Length: 320
Ligand code: NAD
Ligand code: AKB
Image 1 (cartoon, rainbow, N blue to C red):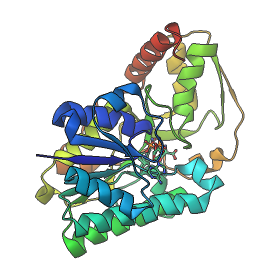
Image 2 (image 1 turned 180 degrees about the vertical axis):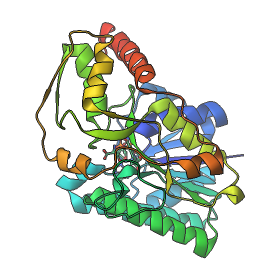
Image 3 (image 1 turned 45 degrees about the vertical axis):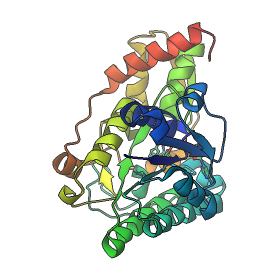
């Protein structure tokens, strides 16, 4: 019986991954945890929820013992924009928290650990048009530095202790359930909410800014497919590039205008422009496709249609 502990379950990805895993493995077998207890009613009612601080090893150990955990998913993080405002907090949560998880996994013989990485591992020196799987990793943000260090330390635990650790370099994730938590790619979510609510959006990066992005259903599929892959067939472990789409802000606004013709966008770039400029336009995800069959479903227009439908419905019901 799989017993999964998700740390950081209240965030943008965790709130939806928890529900997806509960549908597969049963509510009681997926323990949602976070330092923050502002979780949706759906998440709180569909299975256990616990307060865990990833920087406090004992708070994780008590969950391992209480629930007999055999899989840990570490989604606790401080993202790129918030990390630039508080770099030491980013280091503490993203690295010291991860080390706690890996040490506990080793000590308590946890069967699998999943740790997301990010396109933030890339930086100057990475080919901008399509970042290869193996390339220069010189990030300019503390968040990116923690993600490179996290990949390296995770691979160290695979080699040194034969621990099953897996991870993907998510692109910017776009979703309509939980708002993103302080990243640079947040504009690609906020634009849909403001288009529905106000018919206009002020973007904090320039119109020709182009980044790799992915819709949440593909993010959930990628995560679960990697979790279920045969470990012995993996040549990479914690650093899989996963691509889905790549578009500029102008192309995103044009896609929204197909459904909201009068949508207006203006641009007021701030400090996040430099972060976005340090990341590639797209990634080469051949390794993920070959090693565990990665294949995304959503393109920009399919995602726009679905985002506007769901957010439009929430707006009509007065939920946003
Ligand atoms: P998020 O900011 O939405 O959620 C992170 C969660 O971690 C929050 O609920 C927060 O309360 C929790 N947290 C913070 N400090 C904690 C602590 N000390 N102990 C326990 N929990 C703590 O982030 P997300 O977007 O859901 O990201 C999840 C993972 O995916 C992260 O590793 C992130 O780097 C990675 N990722 C996300 C994206 C994206 O676009 N969302 C892209 C690339 C990578
Ligand atoms: C961020 O913008 O910080 C995240 C990410 C791409 O890792 N969304």
